[in-house]
Length: 173
Image 1 (spheres, rainbow, N blue to C red):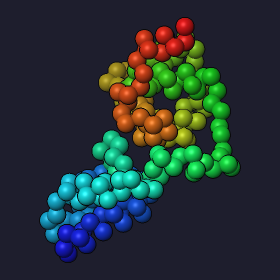
Image 2 (cartoon, rainbow, N blue to C red; image 1 turned 180 degrees about the vertical axis):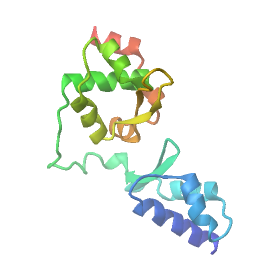
Image 3 (cartoon, one colour; image 1 turned 90 degrees about the vertical axis):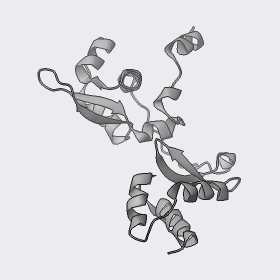
């Protein structure tokens, strides 16, 4: 397989993948056909799709195609489903995003109120949070962190891009 075919192969893998692909998963699939410079192929694809209707995005070391931001105003879907989160879900999500990894007991301590199972279920269903292991404390409680879809939904490249607490306080006051 020559480099051009490898590039087409990687392009089609990213395009058809159900979820964003990591370099490791692409390397595994490519290794069967020989040794290729995946970083070079990804740079070329990024460049090929620059200033087009679709762009190659890298987020948390995963790659996917998405509609170019320049087309956002034209690509709005009028049948967009909205789901209003309860104040409890919003508080829980904020606590998880700023204190991750965090246990349910820690969330309850910060909120000063119990966290109901349905709240976590809603955030899990949206794929905004995910379990991240267990604390090495009695009962070995599950720790929660934000998931890839949280970053994607809020347009963040990394959890570090969240506004700082003092920035939020200045906006609120």
